[in-house]
Length: 237
Image (cartoon, rainbow, N blue to C red; front, side, top):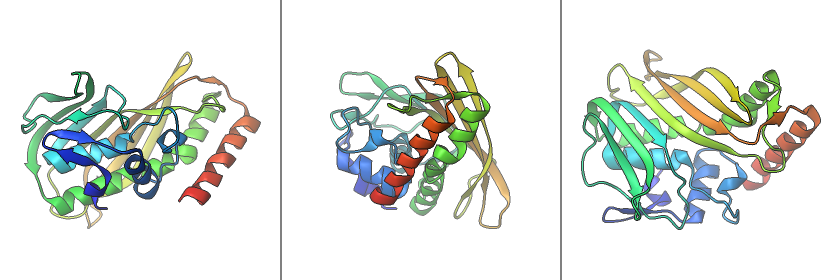
């Protein structure tokens, strides 16, 4: 993965084209959510891409948490603070000062480009497994589902915690998943284990996603959504 192909940086001003966001979603993250299509009226940049760019720009720390507080599309200019992330937290905002991503981190750090690229790519590739492989069973078990006509799944946060910084490639293994339902909204928690090249445990990671417009689960309708999604993966990959 050459992350610089998927964003534009002019000084501290970060922008994305629709093509860059769409290509990253489909070619790197295996994410075929229609909201990342270049012609979607509610297009947004994948949270995975923002995560990867933040790591590329600021480096990797032992514990990092990314909370997505706003939506980035091709019209937004993201302002990257000209500083290292130290201790507490940092808000990444747009030109109007609206918060888009809150980043907190602690522990040792590194700017090793090869390690960061390996970790980023391994982490974001799990996005392609979220739907339908993980989300559909969770929704079925909780008797809820997203709106089949306007399916909307958005990232809330991404977190990485490592016992120590690895010296080489990092691999992610799926650990567990859960869904908490609150009315028409649901929060999905996906947990992963981090391992080094020798297969030894070195930490864990967590993704949180928001499901909107929940209604009673309907197997036939959900099967249609899954079929449509699978067709997209074949034609757009």
